[in-house]
Image (cartoon, rainbow, N blue to C red; front, top):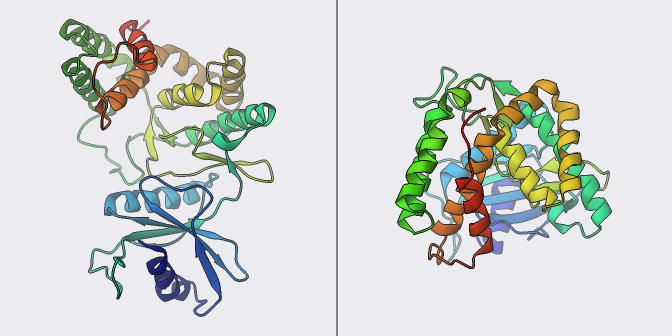
Length: 325
């Protein structure tokens, strides 16, 4: 969606839906752009700013709307959904280059993403607020896993079966690209399979952001942390998200990592700490396996580069995996 089409869509669809047709407004790119959607910041006279997301694909737009609705229902910090247009219909405006994609509009979260915090003291303090925020998300639980819209009676595959099938697929893919030998891939799969009963016993599932990195948490001027870019929201065991957050927010800083874990469990409690400690041996190698697979599968990636320090480190963590305690 180009800027002219965005302005026409705002004036012709969004403002009328809000009952403010004809009000002066401005549409501009936000300070930080998105990767899978076109973003436009809407500033209408007399109103807080809004963020319009224009998606080429229905699925991601629907997941975004669903996630924001769900977070509003459970009262967690997040942008609020204001408007969406997910209808499957002819989506053209007059004029060249004016195809209308699928649209969501949410409240704009003013502030700075954690990745943009230059002051180490401020970044550390914000990281500990991220830990507390993640714990508040994970405190929301339910029996079934998957997206908020997943059937109440459960999915065809259990979380355990789905996850172990994914581990087999990723290990096979890494073996085909030369990052694991065939024997190593077999050993990795066997080691993951040895955790089947332990992981199957995890219940209930926790509400997870599923993309907890430094670009997806905003520090507001009031000092609050608000998660954004929530289209991957789902119910799953919390341990992998905590491990992933430690990787992204603590940057090999052992002191900060220890403080991050303590900030998390101050809110999450001792039972969550027990679950984390008893399953970390599964979810940490799984997180590294995913990182390896994504790096190897990216365009232009996949070639075995024995000087790739990240892949070498991640590979060592995967191969060091042990069975359940």
